[in-house]
Length: 129
Image (cartoon, rainbow, N blue to C red; front, side):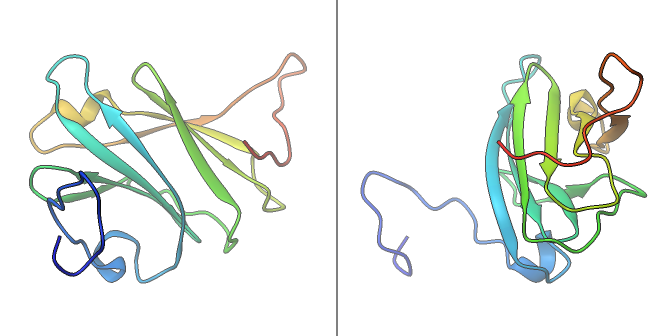
């Protein structure tokens, strides 16, 4: 980690923003460890979407067909093998759920499960964690 100051941290890979995030600026990063394989991923939110970066190889996986309106307000958290992607951007679901179990496949993949539903069948218009 000679380029970046660090304490008790080992830089495994530097993935340029152009590679992981379509050149868009980042807004949040969160970790995911597969319970099945122990493989670690960095989940990166950026102004128009989300990508998963393999911590060991630096390979990047995106959810096919998923795009999000341009907004700096994106966050992601994980529970089990699902990622909960939230945004305060208007005109889109406030919470989108992704199935991360496909990251254990060859080739790895992310599935867009869809917007999170609430009791009335809809979802929140915007959210923030």
